[in-house]
Length: 397
Picture 1 (tube, rainbow, N blue to C red):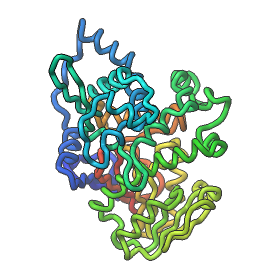
Picture 2 (picture 1 turned 45 degrees about the horizontal axis):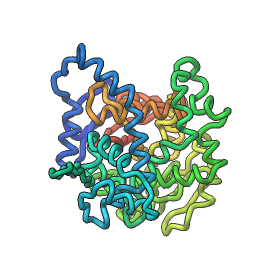
Picture 3 (picture 1 turned 60 degrees about the vertical axis):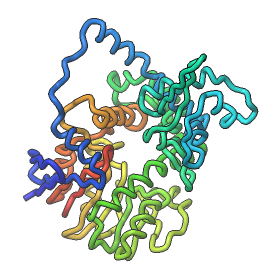
């Protein structure tokens, strides 16, 4: 029998393997997950003037990510944060902090800050007087763009998504419908795939790796605080582990793990640094995967087709003993579509995958992952909700 589990609001799926869990060290996180499972009564759609206003907002939506890209390029968040002060500053006060020459247009900066304030990135502080003055501080969203002691933030993730080569692809998204055999990115970049260009352009690859590190570190901290799935594991294999950062963090937390294996393409692991307790192994996950008590992977399955995912999972199944597990961290789509931030972020990420990486790679629902696990031979499945965007998926042998 294929068994399934779940934390928070248990929901039995059609897949006989399934169980769901929602683990949260943050009550707001749990509330958000609960809200996603049981959305409020549907809001009536806009009509008349409201409908026209809504389509105008959607048509101009490009202003949002490109303005966000601008404030990251200008390093505005660090300028306001000033080692934790977060003192409200006017655009005129920010300009010399981001452009030491003193040149720059504070009025245009203020226009960008006002628009991003409407999306919750900044707080606006209005000071009345002979002339109305606006000052800006960082919200919790804005603080994700502040560079930490390791030089990381979500800023690199923003920049990575708006590189010239990626931006070209958005003009031909419709081509994913017309002909899904080739990605819009490939059609817009002279036949080159995204990963192919990462290999040819070190600056693109470096930014992609920094972006992934900026997202990975806070996510892994949450995982290590609240997830018990590494208990009892002695040999852990990280598939697609890049430089081995995740394994380093896992081994620091779980000293009972005797060996970590960082498995990635030969050219990737060749550049990986030495890490105590970790061996770097090069290879191809479609050929075979090193043996371990458990297999860990992060953001791997979403960029492959269903047949390719089944092949990867089958090799994982072969690499673990009876009682072993595959732990996959992936975006998981809700069954129903609503207008929550979580649902929108997941669906937007799905279109990003379709446009940039694989036209038939995709974010999937729990049911779809459950069925893929069953087809690869796994006997149990558990979805662990520990993050708003990414879900831990356990497949047991």
